Image (cartoon, rainbow, N blue to C red):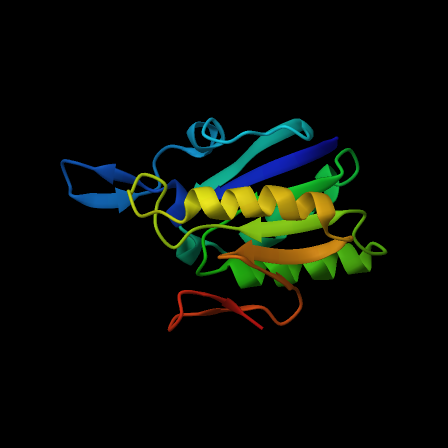
Length: 170
């Protein structure tokens, strides 16, 4: 049974609809609600860490470093880490995390970044699928840093978002 740290940073997956403004924005986390829709047998514990709640376009290099530091810290007590992240700057956080872990002697478990192209609140969301895939992937992948979305797992380095296909490629 796996012990997984689930870090949340915001992104499209956690955007909620503002009826007054007619906009989607990062205001409150939705991951606990999303997890409530899943059968989590096989996972002994999920430790939720709400690191930030930002659109990834607003992330700074300091934010990427903060994520990498928290991943490194969580790997000391967990079998793996899932990072829920906005897709626009996910690659930067993945590369920063890989560099930090490599500098410390390598990853001690799998680190899986995921997110969504459409918010969890929308009917046509890809959020449930991507979180489900990431929670499975983190349990079976060897130590390393990955992105898992849309039925694909890609290992860093060299992962990037492809705006034309609305997914990640290498």
